[in-house]
Amino acid sequence: MKRKQPRITLYSTSGCAHCRQLKQWLQQRQIRFQEMDVQRNARAFKEFQRQGGRAVPLLMVGGRKIQGFDPKRLPAKLRKAGVDL
Image (tube, rainbow, N blue to C red; front, top):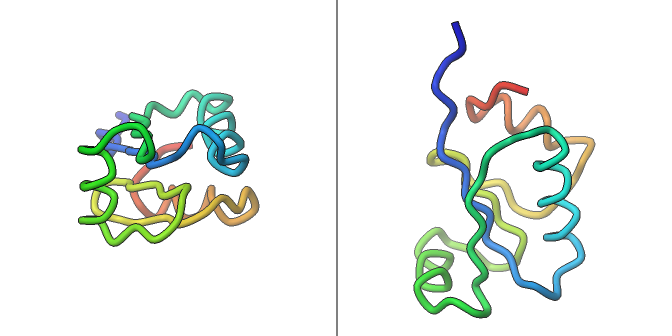
């Protein structure tokens, strides 16, 4: 039986190449997430700041923070946060 996946939020900006790469990486693996553009959405920016965000992309997985996009390390970090890959 599959466990319930944690909520995943991607804080990004439209001009960020690493954000686009991370978004594509997640989509290719059919990992569901909500994207929040911190440049265009004031509420998203406030949430981003409240999470301790300093730069994008910032991925919040449940209560865990994953900063940046490192495709070599990301699978292990996601598994540790409770995501089935």
